[in-house]
Image: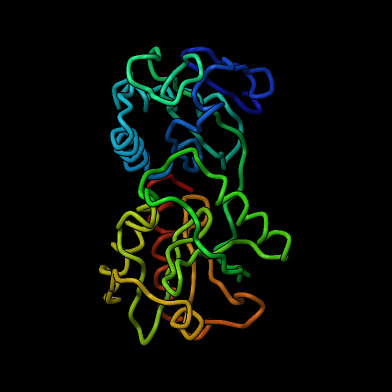
Length: 282
């Protein structure tokens, strides 16, 4: 078994030894899309959902992925199978391809390039309580596409780390959108609220499963914008992603928040953990 493995257009090797062409448009323009998930006991979590999303993202920026979905799944699974560890981080992306630097992309590139890698990675502790900061959302207006253009998110997450926090919560004016690499939710009076799936947020895979769990558990769901003030006054605030199923937030911008509705939060947290155990084993 290997410590890690990477893939680029049919070639595989250790991540540290892999190289890509300088003229891949990812290098100049961040011209591509990506997806990622955790593999638990070598089973990629919510695999079909993640595969569907990368094809959807690619279609929104006119990239025709030169690999059928089933073939992509087989390729990624073969990488996962070669890496040791019970918990692995799985990443893959598709860029527009290789060509001399030029802003227009019509007709100048070869086939899109497919990248992937797998390495050990731990999921966040779902029983922990996390600290966050708020950051004005200055990203572009296509946040529903999982593009590799991530500089604003990188900078926001760096600010959070420098403040001793785990995540940054974006807002446009008073409207809360999402976090730097996760979706955000509030519980108030037994109702779960989260931003709608418009162009200002990425429709997270974990998000979809959490909403399904809420409906199964009898927790009402409202997919409408909420404000920073509503978030600060909520009974619970939490974020989610494929590597952070349900992470409870206890502090935002240095102020205590939430942690007032353990019953409903625990229903969501425990049901999601059980769902992942049934899917991935262990």
